[in-house]
Each structure stands twice: as structure tokens, then as C-alpha cells.
Image 1 (tube, helix red, strand yellow):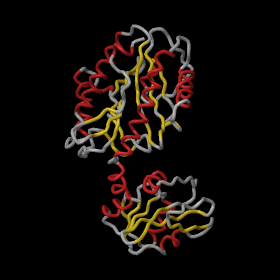
Image 2 (tube, one colour):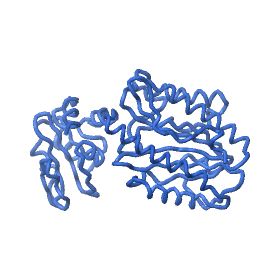
Image 3 (cartoon, one colour):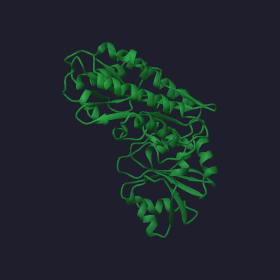
Length: 348
């Protein structure tokens, strides 16, 4: 419960209600899948954590648990343990559970900044696990080039990625693999289709797996043959990726990283075609609350882990994205992905 101790020291309010399932897992080590039923972890400065859980689910032995049945008044149940009319709640609590407290005169503030501030700074175990998850991702991606065959579909290649993931120590996928060919890459979050692979195609593979509860995420592109226009874009995006990595250092701002990647692409004349932020946080969820964008001036600190994934997307023609995960060290940055990305290495 060291994380909860950090949380209570950080909180300004005396009590905080955590309802988000992944936040509860992060702070307690216990997973719950309660569907639409209410679950809440009440954290307080002056009492031990209290979990409110429907009786249909097994209560953990190391947390004080208050069990309720379907139909019970969960608002009154929690209210019995509240010591003040001012409470913090996480930003994901469903309104059907939150509004009754407001109607009863409670002053509710957003407690998510407390929760996120601790969660975004990874400890040594988390960082080493994220690195190992990325190494498994690297090994799979390194096999992909030799498996590319003219005539295969995006769907078929995505299935191969999933099959390879299942043969590693990974216990699941961070997300369904994104596999796209040439013109389909113009959609940053396209879905694999029946489009078949041709001799002059570009192949984008965006994939990630889960290792000991922590996610990996990486994107690489491969060239089946000559494609001068896409080769030109690739070299621009690779330069942007490297510029973003170089901009990561303690004391700088997350917005500086976005500006560094965007400056390269804008200087090449493709600014309007870089349509998303530079990156996102990574941890027990694939997308965590570290928004690497021009609008986030949060100071970069050691322990932060996030993606750097600039891209260029030209509708009707194609696109390129290159993604690496990094973690911030005391002195600078460590790139978790070691899979090759120089143009000479990814041309089939």
C-alpha cells in the first residue's frame, strides 16, 4: 500500500473516492470486473482504505471491504464512512453514483490529478517491466519483415502478429494490431482489411503486448519495393522521431517534445498532414495520462514513460508513422524499443 501512502500525503482533501477499475488495480494490486455495478475505494488521511464491493465478487483479504447487495442504497452505505462534506472523487466515476452525493450537499472536487501525479512517475520495477515488455515487442517486430508475402491481406498479417504474440511470455495484447498497406496508412487508426499486399507497397505495423500487467506499443514501417514518395516521407518522419527523442530531458516540457517533432515535419512542408499529438503515456494501460502535445506544458520528470510517434498522413496516397517508447532518466532519456528503423534496414 505504499502508493496509497503517497496518495494520502499528496491529497488536500481528507478523503478521496476511487472508482476507476484500473486506478483501483494500480493502488491495490487487485483487479475487479464488476460490470455496471458500483465499486469504490475510499482513501482517507485518518483511516485505512475501505473497499465497497458487491457481494457477487470475491473480497480481497488485505483490504477492509464493505459488501453490499443489488438494490442496496450505496450512497448511504458510503456516506456512513465519510467524515467531511468535502470529498474528492476520480474523474471517471459514473454520474449515477456521483449525483446523489451532490444532491445531498457534498462538495465534490476532481481527485484525478492526485491519482495521475503518482501514477505517471514509474518506479524501478515498473520501468524494468515496461522495458521487458518492449523487448518482447521488438523480437516479434524483427520477425515481421521475413513474413511479408505479396498477395497476403492486412487481416492475414494482423492474425500472424497475434499468433506471434501468443508464443511469447506476453499475457495479452495492449490493443488489436493495426496493420495497413500504403494508401490505408493515411488513416492513423485504420482497421485491417482485405486489401492485398503488392510489390511496391509500404506496410505499417502498430502493435503492443502486455507483460506482467504492463503494456508495450511500437510502430514500424516496411517497404516491399521502390516507392520514392513514401521513402521521402519516411526519412522526414524518422528525423522527426529522432528530434522528439532528443528533446526529452528533465526540466523541459512535454510540449517541447511535440514542438521538436512537429518542427521537422513542418520544415519539410507536411505540417498539415501531421494530424495527431506526438505521444501518450504508457503503463498498465496503453494510453495513460501523459499527453505529449503542444498544449501540455507539464514539466518532464524522471520516471515518466511515454511514446514518441510522429506521422505524416496523405489521404488517397498513404502515410508513415514511427513509434518508440521512452522513459525519462535523471540525465536524459532511454529508448525502450531497439527494433531497427533506419531506412536501409526496413527496405525488403
